[in-house]
Image (cartoon, rainbow, N blue to C red; front, top):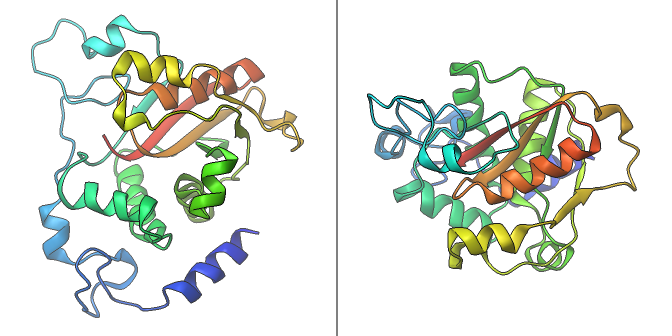
Length: 240
């Protein structure tokens, strides 16, 4: 199934050595899918970071947690993101999700893998993704987080499991306040029980999504996985 998806997307966008961001052609681009000029303009998340969610924090704090993680329970172990959600990364993610560019999974998957290897964020038994509600999946045609997760799974040789199901159709998260996002997503996710996945119990799982904003999505997905018996959940997103 994974190879079928990759083959299909290769047909949709077969060109090599083209920057997905600016369409610049250079033989040195290869499987990075981004030119040096665009890469250099990306805004990175830089330390010091919140130990829990990876948000940049100020030096000299008595605890290594951001106010949000200090005041609100987080079910995941840690969340990490290499980039800030602005500039070409923000535009790229928007195109990936809303402008029918599923092949962007190669660009963002490659960037995520480079980051994960750099910080040694690799010790997981299984990889899962944040699911879309069936109505949104039908209209979009693909789940961008699933494409990313499958790419990472194939490259790291860690099994991808379709473990989660979205059972509640919610309002668009970006238009909600933090409190409303939390309420909006409460009990929105459950285990996809049509798949026999008892083997993920007592395991360490990497949850893949595109953007970490308030963390409500990652938190609710993590809660569903932990309630099912998963031991630990880690989160990776492109940006925050």
